[in-house]
Amino acid sequence: MNICGILVHARPDGFGAVKKRLLSVKGVEVHGMSDEGRVVVTLEEENEDTMAESLLTVQRLEGVISASMIYHHNEEGI
Image (cartoon, rainbow, N blue to C red):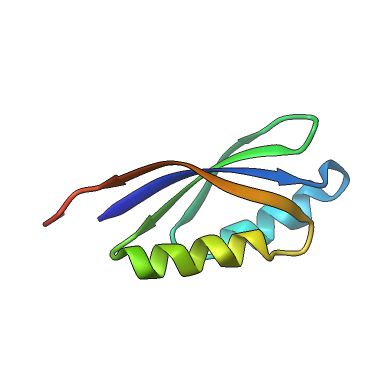
């Protein structure tokens, strides 16, 4: 199991729509947002290739300015 923490910078004026789009990505959980549009999310995926694809999907969502992986953990056999 791969788990990563992602810092997303989104447009704060449309956060409701951005949150909905983020949650549409398999494995994504939204944990909080600042007034400036910074969003803390986690992403869980079985393999690293799928995780990389999901991160690219998050980066390309409408309303997302940037998305950066800030933490990655891999546990085999979970």
